Length: 118
Image (tube, rainbow, N blue to C red; front, side, top):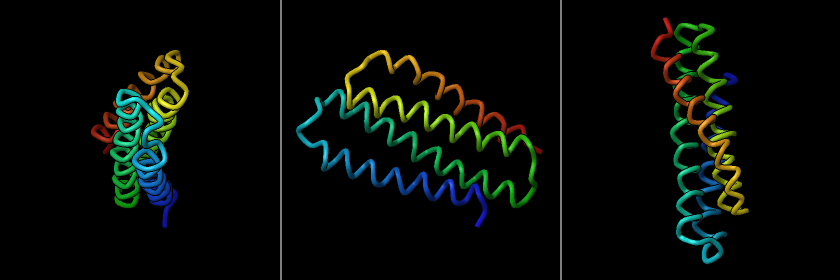
């Protein structure tokens, strides 16, 4: 199994765990708004963990720096985008929302790099 396959599998494992935590562990503890924010983080983590499987597949077919960089962007994007949404929803610290768009830009960069990869 490659690094990117493992990263994708770990990302999906965390997605399932965090989704279950949101559904069961946070039940009644968060407002509907904050629960929605947490769930958005989970959803985007899932999308980009699946994107890491695409990175793993692309690297196995035609390795390139662009595909490698896309994987890095997806992982960093998950940490910044999803991570900031998790922290925001659990703490209520609205300032954390300033980090979220940086993660979103990294997601966009990752998909762009994949689209342009040879």
